Length: 53
Image (tube, rainbow, N blue to C red; front, side):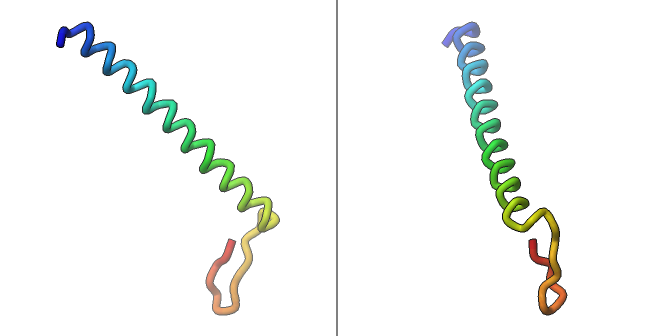
């Protein structure tokens, strides 16, 4: 494998990983936003002092 081909493979792999990371980031943000919306954006205390969100 020539150095130019290897370099292109690395560039493509990095682009794929960055896209995958962005997808995961968006999913985490959506999950956090949904959780905050469902709980009213406030933290409540449970019966035995345990924090629930």
